[in-house]
Image (cartoon, rainbow, N blue to C red):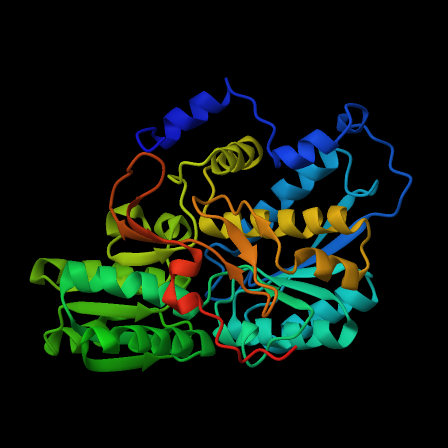
Length: 414
């Protein structure tokens, strides 16, 4: 798989047919229910997805929706869930907590959704999590990586699919040290997300004797990083850590390339990147060592089937944001099937402690004590050219409970 180009994979897809959703689900589905022309008599199961479809995080948020739509289509083609079709409703949270709460409130009170999912911005995730708890609705966080969501701010109605910042940092920091050395400068977005990422990097780096020689904090939505990178260069770091995401990260990577800092042997890295950053960036500008939530070179059959499904629907290989939407939606709907109901308490019980195939090499689990998805974290080196499927060379995979950052700190009181 790693040696297959994207064009080759698209050609292969025309010759190959897969049953996409899990074998367990496929076995349970009758041939009759596979008919795409099913006449639904039951009310649909409604799921509201919130994502920053505008704002600096919009580089890839539509991919979260795309992944969720792929999952919904596959379940509906196989008879729906508990005899009911699944319907996805979409809303833009604009990376604004007030906007997110208004959209989620409309989903709950007007659209009468059964479940909520989505968000990337940490403030939005926290606000919607609190609302979901008040309204007794299950909320599956797909993109936010705040440890607080399954720590001090946890509640029984929220599950977090994304690995949090401490999990990412424990995987990424050793690889950045190995590649570039241990004298670092940080550039951080002046957001909750940026600050949480920076703290996680510091916490993981200090015991490994990393020297921090400075930090520049910039507003969310900054387009020009030349001055910040020039300041960083003046401190003679071996690596610059970018606590950024979305268009902020794209713009910073472009300016890093323009300044030719790689030629000065100043490395680059951070907690989160992936194909969703490389595509709008232009791959020739891609660089650095990054945490990856998922990558198309993962050699599992379930990952391969997922790729095929996205190629079939959208004619492109999926990004990790697409993975998050697909895999999180799949787990919600599988839990509904196990519960035999959309009743919130029953679905929560079906998710708690559930082990599942997270489309990675190691097993995934929703930890019962705090509802964190404990999972593999990948670390990849970005390349300015295609490496089979995708543009990252996988350096390491830190699996589930072997990740020190994944430890349950016992500060979730549900």
